[in-house]
Each structure stands twice: as C-alpha cells, then as structure tokens.
Amino acid sequence: MSIFEAGMLLCFGIAWPINIYKSLKSRSTGGKSPFFSIIVNLGYICGIIHKILFSPDLVMILYIINFLMVSFDLFLFYRNRKYEREQAANAAACVNPSEVH
Image (tube, rainbow, N blue to C red; front, side, top):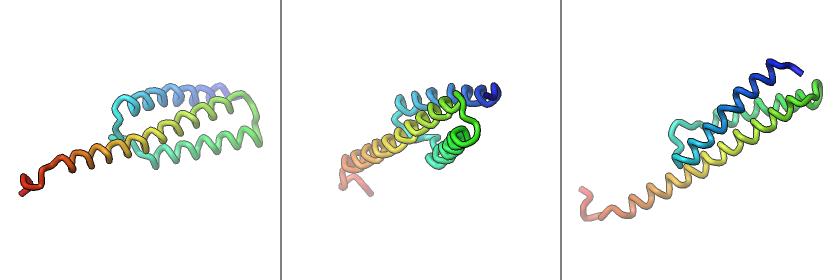
C-alpha cells in the first residue's frame, strides 16, 4: 500500500463532503460542472480497476468512498438544476403579461 496514494485520496475525500454540503444548502448549480464530476469519477473507476487487477489493498476502499461522494454530488447537481428550472418557470408564470412591454 502506498501511503502517498492513500494521502491523496484522503485529501480529496475531505473536500467532497464540503462540496456536497454546499450543494445541499444552496440548492444551486452555480459553480458546478457535471462534466468535471464525470471525469473525476472516471479517474476513480480507473483507480478501482487498477486495484482489483494489479494491486489489491485497502486503499481501494478510499477510491470507492470518493467515487460514491462524487456520484452523490453529481446527483445533487441534477436535482438542483431541476429545482432551478422549476423556480424559473414559477417566476415566469407569476409575471403579469399586461405589465410586460
């Protein structure tokens, strides 16, 4: 097991809950990129596959935990986007057409 690989995954693992908390609290997609999250998850999948095929050890658990956190944050992105669209539709429906110039 590489202590440096574990350290990297632990550092990333600390960042994701903060990101998830912000997504839950703000209910906004501002500053989020689903493309970025998908790329990060692909990296975690590659790390998991490498661990399974060539270097099985406990660090794989960190890859899996990080993958799950990024997946949850990605889910929140799409939930928040739906929420934002509903809010915009409600706001547009509240506009009185006679007041629009």
